[in-house]
Image 1 (cartoon, rainbow, N blue to C red):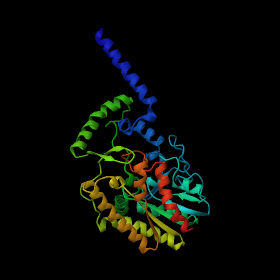
Image 2: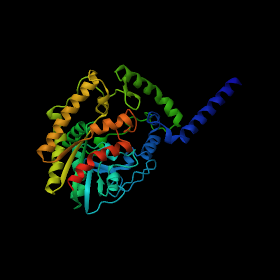
Image 3: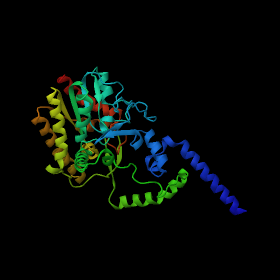
Image 4: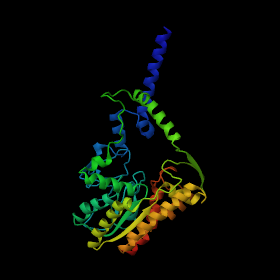
Length: 370
């Protein structure tokens, strides 16, 4: 009898937990979502506007959202007929084209750069997309602007140091061996909840995958994924150091080559049309915080060296082509010291305030060239 009561209680606990998980779907952190079944994971990520095969379309190495798609959990992100974040369709003549990656989409911000520039009476088209690199920036500009006979006065290329160099390397490598955008993105998430075709309740899936997650977290800690406390003017923050380095990770000329190629080809396409280009630099996480870390700290020294190398290379690209170079870093650093500019303190993606800082920084340069 006791065994029966115990078993019944276990069943009720499982049913109750399953119900709570499903009711709180929107609040579930990604760490839990990635432990769910494949179909549940796909549906949740799609509703959150993240990458799953069902909400992306593409050709060759170019991809974007389904045209005029609706992202239920990001209702402020309006997708146009070309599959990009724009509240309005592009006219035959526009003031500004924005090229970039997830920083330029800023999908967790209710207003992106295009929306804020539109409020300043500048017609703006946002062609940024997550996981794009500099070779991608060229492609939608050619397809959506040049091939569509849209005349643009200024093109802004937002170069994100977080991953643009390596993304361009991946693009070039896969393109050479005949791969396409699905190979570039891979499968997200990469691991199925179960090694066989079975869709159990969510709680069972979580319990099945939890040991793997625990072991992986332990390995991460063993591999030195520590944290650092950083004193900002507004507060003391505790930042995970995953991806940070005590020694500078300086890319070689050869490693930079695909990224610079993509930038130069985009600039050349714009200049043929008489369009001015502004090359803008967005820092990675360590560079956002390096202002507030003592110079003797090896993480700070490494971030400064990486930053100086990147700025030198990109400024040279802009100077050689006779275009403007804008560095968002000082403004982002100052603003983040007083008010959070990112989605959270351990992330570099701009929130709405961060997007405003970017627009306030680049707007005078845009106006100068209109």
